[in-house]
Each structure stands twice: as structure tokens, then as C-alpha cells.
Length: 248
Image (cartoon, rainbow, N blue to C red; front, side, top):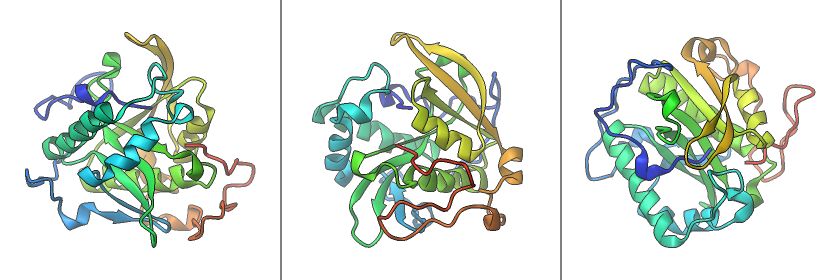
């Protein structure tokens, strides 16, 4: 689900109370925007690093695609200026909170793939305070398990490094592709509701740290998680019966 990053919330926002209580230990990052090396991450096929100015062109392609944006808030595409504003807000979120959105690039070539990461779902006040996991990929990278691969690493970052107690994942009720990714990650549906202003029906799912620790995506339990390939060929190594196409 997209977050309207102009309203991502402030660093002093309390996150220890509310319907979805959580706590976090902050990763203190320098205000220059040049993040500590350990925040940069890699998976079998992807590199993940906090979004930077040079990601703007890729983000513009992403936000200008009607198929990518069809389930995002009111479904509108975004122009370059709007995307630049959201990129600035993403970078500020990293500086304030110590976690945020990672740019995804293909290892070896450096091609921009999309993004995945953590944000504050201020667009849905009834679940606040909370932290949400989300992802978005360029169309040519759909159907390869990349959303799941990136999201698994973001889960590890959120629970093992940042120290969150739980995460939400929010999707439009018709976005079945994202729903399949949530299922693979172990999220469980908590409620269905409507996003104010946009009047869009969404499903809100939750994953607690205890569920993460007991699940196959936790560090130390990698024997139970599929091994992602290193080529651009869609992987078929899923739990039997699960679809390999995760969409975005």
C-alpha cells in the first residue's frame, strides 16, 4: 500500500500506545543523509539501501505507471515534482526515525527495481500509532518473487535491527498480489476498513515479533525459507501449492 509521505508523522510521535502498540530502539543516523554502512543490505538478487536523490528517475517511472498505481489511494499517477516531494519526505523519515524506504536495485547491474521498506500509515488514523511494511516494483520485475524476497529482508531489519514489536501491512481489498505476499510473510488479517478522504476499502494485517521469531523468515530458521535464485528467471521454489507470481 502507498503511503502519502507528506503526512508520515513526526519523530516524537508516541508509538508505545494505541490499538497497535509497539516499541522501537532508534538507529541514530547522521543528518547528512549518508547512512551507516550496516543499513545497506543485500539479498540473493537485490541490493537495498535507503532512498537517495539518484533514485528519482526510477521512482518517477514507477509512479507514472497506471498499472503500478491502480491500487494506491485513489489510483492517480504522480508527476516528477510530486515524486520528488515524496522522495524528500522518505529521506526525512530516515533521518527522524532511523528506518524507512529502501531503494531496490538488481545486484550485478544496478538496475532500479522498485522500493520496499517501513513507513508511518498516517493515511489511516484508526490504526495509529503504527509502522507499516510496503513495497512497489516496476512492472517488468513482477512475477519473480522479488516483492517477497525484499519484504523478508525488511522484516529482519524491522524486528532484528530496529527492534519493533509488530508491523502492519495494508492493501486495497482487490490487490490480491500483495495479499499473497502478506500471506507468505505470515501476516494475519486484523480488520477491513476504509481510508478517509479517498474512500478506498483496505485490509489491515498484522505480524507480531513473536510470530516472526517462530516463522520461517526469521534469521536462524533459513532452512525453512525458500532459496531465491540469482538470475532473472522466476523462481519456483515456493511452499507447495503457493503461487510463484507475487505481482508487486
